[in-house]
Image (cartoon, rainbow over all chains, first blue to last red; front, side, top):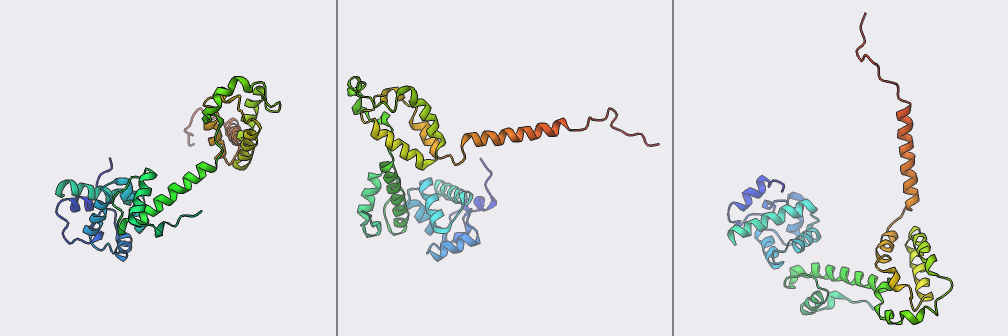
Length: 90
Length: 168
């Protein structure tokens, strides 16, 4: 398994509160902007989408790719980040 | 007949997803587009599968007629020729493959060789339709490359017995 980034560790360490979508692992400025344009301006909105997709990896990856053009690595990072956050806090 | 998915209700989309066996969550505003895309892809695959000529090994209902149909076998496609043609077909591109299969299928309606083919036809034919460069060309290129390497190797200068030159 690849090691998780600092961003990932920071995100999963505490409740996300009002953190911006850019706080999610895998989501940088460019992807963050695209997500914001679609209405996903906060991390919790993406969390909402993640949950509506039943926390399924394939569905979430597909959705992320369609919505902001995330590549495979970015999809994986974001999915892993949210999944781990849910394991701890949901 | 084209299906306009955007006109369907959320429930209808959900039913279609279930019909196609696509994993899904609730169909809501934010997931609608994703599911419509998945359905479109599934429908395209299904259409492709329907149009593609099925290999005779799938036509089980002919097996009972096996004994009788030997007498009525078409002279053009004999069993001993079949495997030869099978290998020849693999070299053709997808279009020719389709035409050849279609004509073959029409010729041998009763498919007496259905049982003899067993599982051989589907896999190799599917693989051959995805080849752009014929196998022999690939082999040729490979052999040329090996020949080149060999040529370089044989023309290399012999290593000096004493690698270190004495400076006088």
